[in-house]
Length: 115
Image 1 (tube, rainbow, N blue to C red):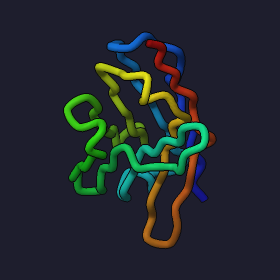
Image 2: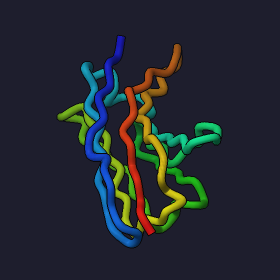
Image 3: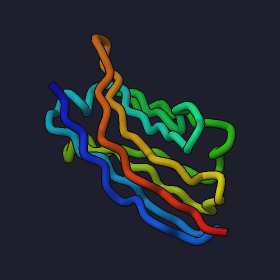
């Protein structure tokens, strides 16, 4: 069982920055793929960024060059640095642990970008 807790969401003006954090309850988290997803009102949940156990990253086209995913294996944590935020980035952001057997999800943190 993996429990994930996100933090760092909030209200920011367009062009601003936020850093999301996700802490896991087990070190298993550190050896597996971790990801950030988001879901805006009325839309499907979408992948924002992913980092594998080996450190390979990939990003949604809409956030490339603005968002950076990183990890701290000692702290069992993953982060999402979000710069140059746009109103269309407004959503609930979810942390995910993508294990071979199943995925685990956090409760989500709201990010609101005002224009």
